[in-house]
Image (cartoon, rainbow, N blue to C red):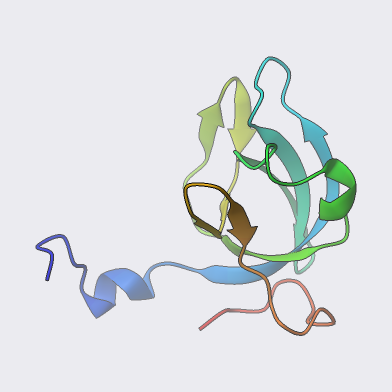
Amino acid sequence: MSDDRISIDDFAKVELKTAKVLEVEKVEGADKLLRLQIKIGEENRQIVAGIAEHYSLEELVGKKIVVVANLKPAVIRGVESNGMLLAVSTNDSVVLVTPEDTDVPSGLKVS
């Protein structure tokens, strides 16, 4: 096993929640980055994700995703990101982590 494993207490600090993608646009000057406006429960947020080569803007709008909701804000290519979406990546593709039931409301805790 790897020495960089975290404790259950560290993992418990991570808030994974469901979110709904409201709007998507490309980040100017960045081929891979998209700016997503998302809704987590009653809160609207903006996140930046490097998934532009794998998803069209149209297929993301309305999609339910899973995000790290309590990540400190970061500025990516001049755009503030307030969270991080979860995705599985291989050499060739990126697949978003999504709830199996698409009727799941946004803002639910993922455990």
